[in-house]
Image 1: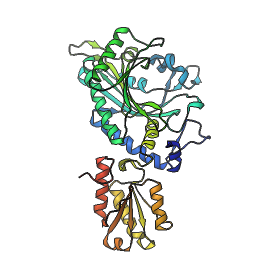
Image 2 (image 1 turned 135 degrees about the vertical axis):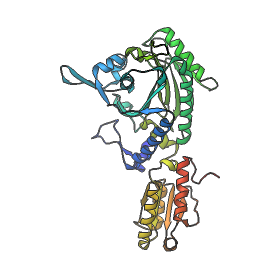
Image 3 (image 1 turned 180 degrees about the horizontal axis):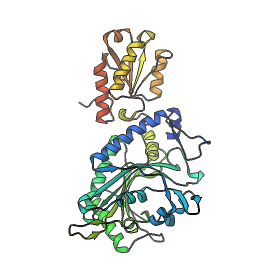
Image 4 (image 1 turned 45 degrees about the horizontal axis):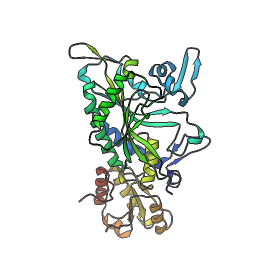
Length: 405
């Protein structure tokens, strides 16, 4: 069976060391390179959609999470507080929304600024039991692609629909295949904050945003502060989980006393939309490793081009090709150790999308012969043309190995 933990070891993507601790994976250079590419893509996608990115600390004073409600509703999933003195007690955050509420209230806001979209790839922590931890899919240290959109009630519908569009765009680029959409609602017997009217309005807004989108309703799966749209995935073992989410929250603006000045100079309360386009980097890559079986699309492959000199006589020529490819923005390695056949087989094992072979003839002609990950071989071509071909595929963020058309 395909298992991201096995592939992670074989491809040197991440390691879980008992000395570091269960649920605290370490990203190795190959995995980190792929993750960086995805992070940069998502951040740029958000920037173009009007998001402003911030940095906030992964811990805060106990009072912050008491105010947000996390200590009251989420304490069992949080790490124990760290007491520095009688008046200074800190906790590792289980969510980013309290800090983003502080970003909003750092100064006065006007209706002209809304929607205000605050984004961050930030760390948070969950005190998961050892028995449920596994690889990247269930961890204690989480790097979340998160954002909080502060808007007026009238803007909520358009805001949610635009978020769903961005989610579809990101999923298409990454190769994510959602298994379904779920509208998570309140259920009996659980603790929720807020009044019935606010919940009814929030559920109505999300249901309207899903008009025309096939989905199922899931009573009892809402967050304690509001209903949400969950976009589900299924891993290679058939286990379902949530990857992307959109959540409405009337509670945090009230708790943090957030406001904006309306057109008549009156003080109004914003609505908070929590959203994540691709979820945590850990769960995302657990899924991507399995769905692509380690053969990532070229744009986020750890090594995009592996250069192989036929023998030592081409060392200088290969170094020049590598420099040109690196200068063009590609992730490149050179492998000159062992027989050519063994190096080609090792490149296939590593799922490198492009292997560039340089022999005496190619070196003389300033050319390179490309072999594609799917087994195809291209005729030798000028180095600039080869680098441009790979660069075009990477820039298009397609799943193919050759430029479209």
